[in-house]
Image: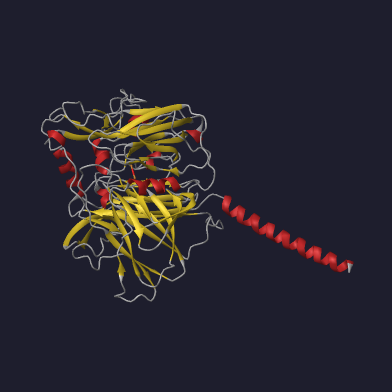
Length: 575
Ligand code: C2O
């Protein structure tokens, strides 16, 4: 008897030992540095047939949407970009924090010269501590209308998702399509002084879907099995619009936003601004059929034209017959349903309680909004088709940002003068009722200043930034994206920001890289400026970015090599 017990004890111990050993093994595997993934990206034209027309679009490797970059947390990614198109090009790795690799960030004239036709450049960065759904897109002119793709970062080997493993995963990229040369379109729009023409179509993974002309078969489809749960990696790759997304009769459970886990939040629809990503779980728990996945406009501004035709894809159950009813996407909210947007925003909380900075070293307050400049005030040749015969602009703290001819990062690194200034104001020069009291027509002064003004941040400073929408011309939800960082969205609200009444969440705020600042409202974000380099922050509506709704942060080096931006790579393109 004694012997038996001992044997049993021994068996139990060895079992425990084996378990521990296995765990150690898994841990050892997961803490060692990642591997290196190589990708070859060629900027190439592709002839496509869409919306009854054939034309050439700019792509990567003749894929539209572009190739998926797969990696695991902590991996190093090297992408050699060769430009075989007639246009300049760069790629931005949207949401990648680019620790000590600002040279690989990609925005043209901010961190690099565009890669000219025939030239190439190696992007080289590490996905340190990052996992989830991110994406990449062109960052020159308006090329990103077709030059985009997913960047999927899996957790380390052996580390599960913090939710039940979905049966399958699918990438769903929301985009806009123009039947025009996008570089030419940008030039025309910028010369006109007014807004851009509306997109010819919305697209889901490049497909407009059956509501558009000649597109009955240009449809994206996901085949599903009844009872299974699917994870959709939703990516907002639109150019000048924000959009709603929903699936008829199905609930979406958000589990990740901008590549960071969230507490599960179930909703009928989501809104994605350009630059935003969401992972949602969908269970195929409805009667067998073919259900519409729908994408439609969210337009919070007044008097702005937009494409109003819904893009449809199919969520199709096994066994659904060809002519089984395609259920209408009645679930899409109205184009101006601000409440639907707020409801989802209210539901976004970090899964873990984060390391939200509690003390603040640098308090910033930036207004964001529209301007109308006097005709001829800057470029007399410009056509003045903006509001009241003016030239449309957009600004932060009433400064319309101008991209210089020499990349700011290079000028900063080389200490060459004359390409930028360091006088971006920490607060607006004038405080007024930003939302309601804004002068919105002449003779009031609706103009902005212009300049390549940067804001310098000390290494390691804990920053709080209030983003305040203004009502000049119109209030609007602006998707503000910061390069090189994610930030905690600690608060947001409608109206003018009031520190006395604003309530902050310092416990589990979402950790994002793009924040849709509520229309006629404000958002408060916090981050620690611990990644040296030059980081652009801008409205991800491309037109607003072009109009100047942007600022560049210069984050200084700290102490020693782990806090210092390395030398530029040898193949850095020249302008
Ligand atoms: Cu996704 Cu500067 O952008």
